[in-house]
Each structure stands twice: as structure tokens, then as C-alpha cells.
Length: 203
Image 1 (cartoon, rainbow, N blue to C red):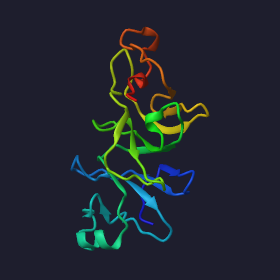
Image 2 (cartoon, rainbow, N blue to C red):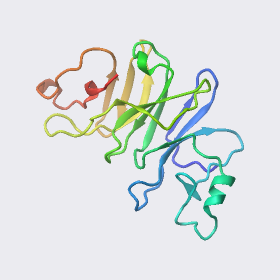
Image 3 (cartoon, rainbow, N blue to C red):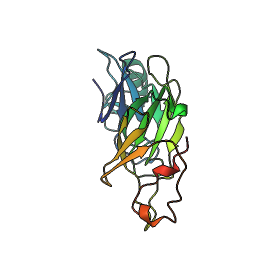
Image 4 (cartoon, rainbow, N blue to C red):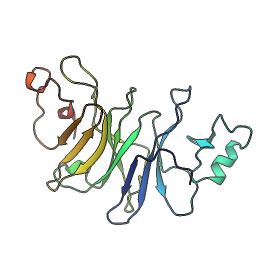
């Protein structure tokens, strides 16, 4: 109970832990509400629609509950992400090809605002639960550049048998493959004029 817009879901292959990436509502404050990653457990209540971010009361329910209720009555997220990043995909990476991502949780941020349109990675414990709000950027700088590429809009993530990762991009109707190799100079390569900048991924 109390989860909103659960587009991003993943089950850890060893522990069977279930994680949910939550897309929050749009408030007038550009920095709130935080997006969330929740560790989903039977019988828990996660606060929607009454609470958001770090124990803050939704403006629609200020006459019904207070901040203390948000912190005491509801299960808190395991991770707070920036507002409006719109997490739409989760992936527990277990391959060797992209070794720096091994045993990390990858999250696709679909949002079009400054913090969005990228893929990030979180450290996880042995249950698959993120151990910190700190993340590393995997694919970034995925902004629109006229005549070269559109802005990225990553959604689904899939690990292939060789350890590379497929990235689904819904707005641009694209399927991209993240792998090892040398980054191409897409700025001067007309063949890639419409390709998102996955080659800018820093791994």
C-alpha cells in the first residue's frame, strides 16, 4: 500500500528482494517531491498519497496528518532521488563486461528536466537494497543537440548474455546497446546524426 506510479520494478536474483522506483507528483517546488526507491515488503504502508520526500506532508492532506505521522506511521524509502527524474527502469547488473557496474542497481531516469535523461548506478547490499543515496553516473550528457541527436528518454534496461545492456528509449523509438569499446566522435560523424549519445557513457 501507499506506492505511486510503480513503473520501475526489479527482483534481486539471489535474495528475491523486490525494489520499486516511485515517480512522485509534480509540485510547485522544483526540488520536491524526491523520487524514491522502496524496498517492498508484505504488509507495509509506504505513505502515498499522504506523505512525500523525507517525512513531508502532501499539501492536500495538511489538515489530516502531520510530519510526525509521516515518519512514524509509514515505511520510509531506502533511497531518495532528485525530484522529477522519473525512474522508469531498474536493473540488478551481474555481468563482467561492464565490471565497474557489477553488483550495482542501475536506474534509468526518464525525466526531461536537468537532472533527468541519464542512467545511474547505486551500491547495494547482499539483499540488493541500495546502501546509500549516493550514485554514480553511467550514461549522462544525454542532452539534445540540433542535427546530431535528440534528448535521451531511457525507460527499460535489459542485461544480455554477453554482459552488455540494452537501453529502451521511448520518445525516440530507439533500442541502444551499452558495451565496452572506444567512444565514437558523434559530433563529426554524420552516420550517427540521429543517435542518442550512449557513446558518452563513462564506465
